[in-house]
Image (cartoon, rainbow, N blue to C red; front, side):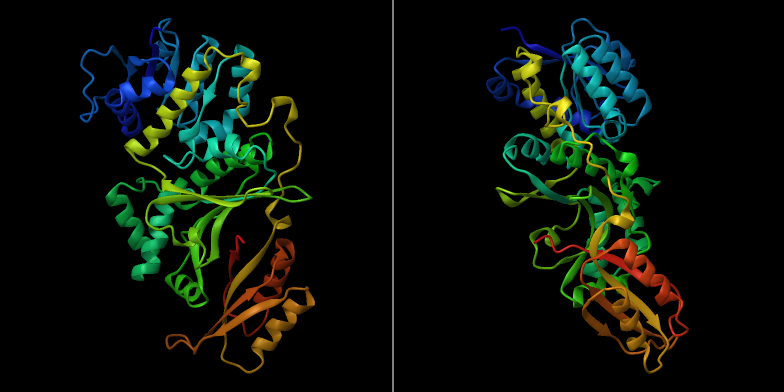
Length: 434
């Protein structure tokens, strides 16, 4: 059987890794796919010194790959929203299957892209768009298809996880660790997407769609970054038996879907709380299987290439199948997607960590407890520290039971209005992931 011809658009870190894996493991990949896979064209702006591409046709025009009649599958690895969207839609229009690692593209434009792919009878595969080398999309879409998924929670940005790990283990400040992450190449010069949760929200949007059978709705995801976290809060959490992680949470409730990314306290004895450095992990809870944990490298040349090539193999296996009988892009048949709404953050429910800076006066704790009690908020534990030397203020740390966020917002407003409370109340959500 003649080999399947692919075109790689973008020969950067992931594109170079994909090319090298395809060359190095060509025989093994062919055995799994049932036929050979040949890189017939590469579109790139500059040479990747890690790749030996002699003999492979080269172009600097990605659209030339999308319209090349000899290409069966286009691999989009250029990133971004605009050119990548045009490229993918052009490839689909010309009857090409597509493999992409572009989480932003899928999260924002996936509904449009999948509709066009169904119209043309082609496949768009995107395993590498979430959690790098961890095959979590395939696991939820296929391996857990017998389950009603209750929730998904993940550490899905390695840069943020590296920063929080360094803050906890070495007592360093956020700006200090961020500078190192940039020097090491973990964070971009503009780290906004990583540290403010946008990158994680792209990935969580995709996971939620596959888990719950809803359209992609990135614009409704709540995002909160880690740039305001202090070493003090990291240490207080540790003293209470928790770790702070930048967590993405998607949970199905009777009222709608929670879709949120924010710093989160997790009990220190949970496996996911012990995922450190740049590693990623995703927990999935289903009604039949219970809780499962997927762990591994969330980025990098060959871990991500592993997922790209796995998608290639799946596409090659499915190329001759009836388009109506292929695994749906978002796990559920297109006409069976749910209209269950995404909840605004103030309708979501969680427990809370609160840190209050109070004047060293009698009765402050009683006032705090009274405000929380009046709003039906139960306190799980309290830790009160000695007055701080530099300002004489007493840090009061509380853990609460679960409450709807709107009620907690009201309570915090009342707490901050107390004469003996100084400054803003620090609030971090708590997830037990039991």
